[in-house]
Length: 224
Image (cartoon, rainbow, N blue to C red):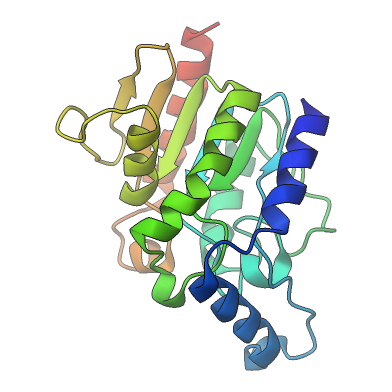
């Protein structure tokens, strides 16, 4: 399983399917943000990471221009990760609350984190075609990991999972805390995305987020 994920991640990192995203991610890496002028940006598609034996798969939207596109690891080095990883640490899914670089010692337990899109998009908005180009990577992660619970961070991740499993969005509705069991037994669990826009306005609070990870654990146990 580990070798399958490593092979897939190497394929993801070398992907150049979307010209707009390739141009944008590489431009951001050259120009940089003032606060990170001395940083060497990753500037490539960002692979998934975590426990290869995970029962919980977390699906986000796409890398942030100066977060994952800089650090090369999902939700690492930006405000979204600054909200996500403390919650995962509180829930026992992460060994530490900080996520600053690929070499910071962060380890995930029973969890793998990935995204709907693997390249940083302009304005944080990948196009439907770009998401379609990335979808086979997410499908293969699902095949390799066989998760019991998929936590969708945001509506786009939720709709992408529905598309993979050929479920009409009229059947399942996105809402924070909503959960649905698919015919194959996998649970889908919805959460607002931990973007700064959601957390700074109070749309997503720490207690609300903590409930998601408690529920994820309960759903895993129900499937045992």
